[in-house]
Length: 436
Length: 161
Image (cartoon, rainbow over all chains, first blue to last red; front, top):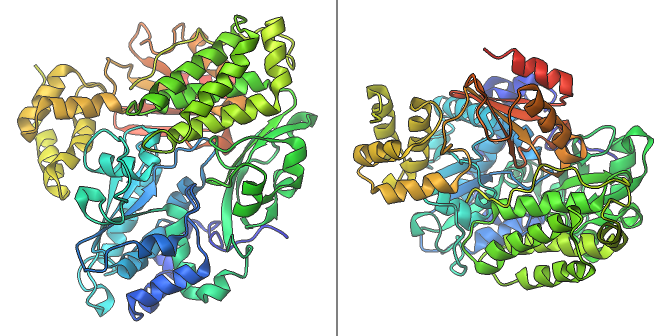
């Protein structure tokens, strides 16, 4: 198996960003085709294609669309471009290099679900993505791909960009809806799910950038054509963001089912500075960590990574070499989740703070052996008890780090220094503050 | 007393009409006001927005304090934001932010004496394949600087007016 250029076929062309260059390379052909289909036909082909959400949860896209009420009630399409899962930078590339690809996928999806209005919620830091999308939306209006009676089909669709303001939690779909409503980005209790009651209490479908972009290609190639790549349960190709201690970090598109080993050693050019592989986080920082040995056996698809006790997530692969201290790495993540907890649910708000303090206390040389058990216990109690998945996302790395690299935690407690580095921790003074 | 400029007010009023719900204009309005108030939101800014938008102060204030991109304290002309999260950390982000702070003779979160810079560490900026990196926000523009070394970062920072 090798790298593929399915979604990314024309990403090397600077002209692909503008509407003329995009049209020259197959752009907006599928929109014309889709508008001649019945909306239900599109939903059916997306279902049959096996496309699953590319943002992290991997939920079947066609099934999600199927949860919408059938009564013709006003509804919204919301593109999740809040890409905040540590390690993930694929959506940014898609929006910067191919904004029309997303827009076309969104108009087709909007037509399929009967939505006349869509928003792209982009994280506030992504200035270039926002500018790229705003310019492309304007071009699409001028060309008649957005607005009233698109290509004479009678279908109307408006699209706008909404800029976030720095909050990881807004990548959670109900948190995103709160934010789009001009509120704190706090998730809402489900059910009702957004497909029934979302933005302004209207049915809303929230899909990731890569998911919506893929819809165009499902229309082009059909369900079977789309399934040319991937496995039965993980259809198609996917963009993976490779980062950490590898020689050639970057975004790579591969068929799902591609060996993680090849991602690191072939595409990624192996571990940097002649070091050895120690651990891999395969699906963004919320995915449980794999040891080097586990990573060498894993393939990049939903089912194989689930069987390995972790997840494909957003496709963010973070590679850690053997000179890095796992206690420090975990502390980096516990700080992140503590900072990003929205504060609504006690197990998450208190739990993320508590574990962050325990890990930092170990780092400062004041750890006790029972703190290692305590970490796992607190993390266990954070799981499955909150409105959204952030608490679970914070707990999973803790449990996997401590279980798989326990020797490093024990050594730090006993010796007051890192087993790998042989030195005490020299961090910034621990600031027990979160901005929320 | 903070007052929006007439252009700023026009922009806020346009945002109020842009979405299905007026409350949705709060996030964009905070950005508009922040850029007119030297890069931060003070209680007076909230008051002015409340008056212009006819939305209670509390509904604006709670939004402002929830999100990290609204600064609640005065900030340097250039806000140097060094990404601290794992992929950058694995590639020397902590050493980089320490180096920048020591070169500018400042601490994280503090404005430099000449008022030119504030250095902060921020969470994942989605530039993990080009680590370590920083985003510098200067007024209305924000730019990513990637694949940094200590030297290249300081050259960029010292090159800012």
